[in-house]
Image (tube, rainbow over all chains, first blue to last red; front, side, top):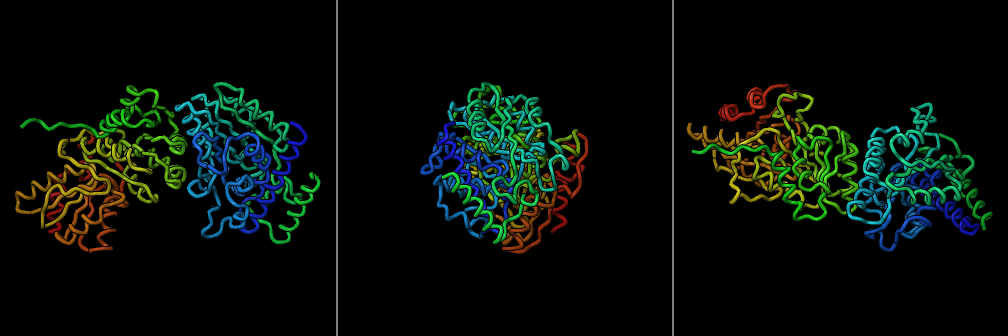
Length: 279
Length: 312
């Protein structure tokens, strides 16, 4: 990846992080930690990888994204707003009464949201259905789904993993965001899903492991996924929960709590500094 | 008189899917390793490229159905009522109901007439579960003719539908030529002024027979077939309450949460009158031949006659 592109994507990731902070602060709730860890994924997917049109969000042959870890909606909403699916000012209404931006993704009302998710383990099944649908009709679109590492403790994920492999869904890419933290502690403490790559490999998937915050590796992974035939691909990414805001990084407490006014200012200042450094 | 034809509504389901595949381009049928029993196997044989077995994984099947529907397919997802409505409840609720996707759940082997498999497979709770999901349409057809019409109506309806079918071969009493199905509309099978029997599914024919018996004793019972349990036909129920003053509901389902509850809700709100519920009395089923079980659980015309007399 050339330096200009990389810098552009880094800036977008930083702006997505600002949107996450904006949304969760005004909502006085939400899940900033796991949202911050997928900012690079969303930058790459929406600005480099996926064929989508903000002016025509229901475009028939668009690529689909199912945010299976639906509680990280603040990240998805920030990305969609930045991309132009709806005004960025909408982010401040996150989780408010009457707001389009529900606590978890709502495909009925939010332009650009391809599937309603939030109850863990369910989005990946819907993604399988979308990928199968493309196979049935000979459509060229691809389906992406982002899962949490805690989420894969749900049995339904492994039902879906079997299904995707059985029906050779090579138009499906799952991303497992391995930030190592879930509500009750580290994933090892709560219910270890490790080793994640080996588990997916055993279920017949093509497995790629990357650093979630490295655009070179992200690009390489998505390019490699396109060359895989007759198998679904999973990208298992090592990530940092709370990434980009020093006092939130690797702190389990930031899984599901919003910044107060002071923390909000401090977080935005850090992100502004990051953005300035990139300019 | 010639012997009346008997067909299980699950067979009607499989046959109707094949017929629909000729008319609906985007039809897809899913099953969870029960195609031979749910009768989607009939579809699988005729339209193999539109049939996908999901294996013994009902939760994923419902999610896959949601994804297929989200991309424009008309999906029928099939399993036994126990595993569809029961095991996969939350997936139906969140992945299908909440986004109001075009998924039709074909749930067979409902009620105790499953027979020998016993309590673990006899689902008497599915109507109650599905009724609580906003926007879910529930159809419980009574015979082969009605089941065909129900599958067609479900396919043409925009939104999620729960279809309830039985394992047991049951008499085909509706006339194929004159029968008309209207979603959400009950059917008055017999007019009457003394009492109304409101039945659904396999119990409709038992209610008809009970009314015949009652008429021999000078009791004039109205019989209403409620095939669409949600949205329920309030008008036909209120009219019956006003005109006959007494209602007996009959269903092969727990008396809690099913047809009886739905009718009682309407009557209580709009025209209070005596409502008695005949059904599975908040207990689990058991193994045995279907017909013997129906008798044992009081789900036959003789018991309907008895219960009606007790109300007069």
